[in-house]
Length: 129
Length: 381
Image 1 (cartoon, rainbow over the protein chains, first blue to last red):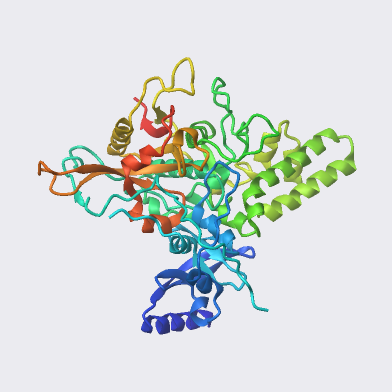
Image 2: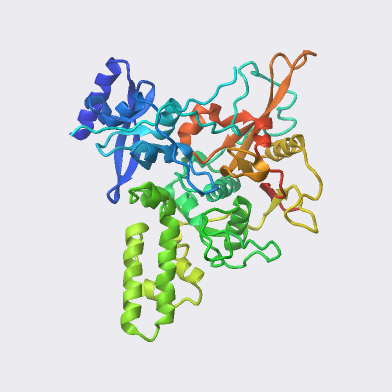
């Protein structure tokens, strides 16, 4: 039933110009769960952000950048993943059907945004033309 | 209650990734004289899935896993992008394989001779990290087998982490706790109540943080090991995973691990001879042309690479090409080297960064010119 609702949501979203979703695996509470990722504003979110006008991930992405917390470690972690903590989310790894890994910021309301999408939105990389 | 978000004014943009710079758009004409079947491979296409190291300083383990995985796929002639979890090498398992810091010591002969996340022989110095080359070498040619993602997976561990401090320090802290249980056990072997408590606590710790199912008998056997490293291995590593969930290094008999550039005989931390950025790029090109990727360490993301107080990083180089601003045969053509970086920052980073193709000169400018920073598997002669 849930899958039917998700499929219908994706179709509705598609008609409004958002991309149809892709299915990812997310390990939570001791098991893998299926998560549908969709594009909004050109960024990747979980499909719950389509329905929820108060999607925290969407609101954060549309806001200004947060200060990046610098650790004392001299070793580089994934900066996109670390940025999740700076914006008040947890970082989690989602996997696609081929087990490629994606860092997602997961907020306490369950909304998710691709960590690199968010990081690049707030700290756009310098492009050399 | 409305949430209030604190914004720290206008912040300077974080100059991350000067090591990973795209070539200007004008450089779009490939120089086919540099990339042809006659010369060899330009890009290693049969690469494994793209992994993320999360916010942890474990790029060395991720790079080693990628190198070993690619070699396995090459040896077995299988599609590396479509592997089952039981075939995927666990980067988390490789984090525990770190060579001794004293370069005069021989490579350890047993899987159990790893140092965990510490790079310093001083147990009081806590710093995560390692060297992808020694990890790849030891894991592939010494231990020969590593746990698969089906048994030890980073996303499973991360699912239990609830704040940054916990994430970044979680693994170190967990291993420290495990060591303290082991030390307590060894110290109080005559005290039954003490030993019961030690291994009951260890079981709880493992179940909570590693999601592995261990019996009391297995924990007791682990406590019976004569070193902490063997205890850890018995409990959580290769010996814990079933045979079906271990990944063997398939080329163990046919390859060696080579490194460049050579170290001085008098001082292993200094170069034998100076090496230019162009020579490094040429070496990477030659390795890729031979059909194998290269592991590159010493990449400094921020600041002076020779005195990197910023962030040290390692990546896999899986391609080389030359691109020009006009037809290469034009005498006015300017051509630049580009290399394909397979980073451990997840698939989105690859997608957003031209699939990892970056300016090779910019990458080398941010890389410390030290001995043995480039490594690769090569067929034994």
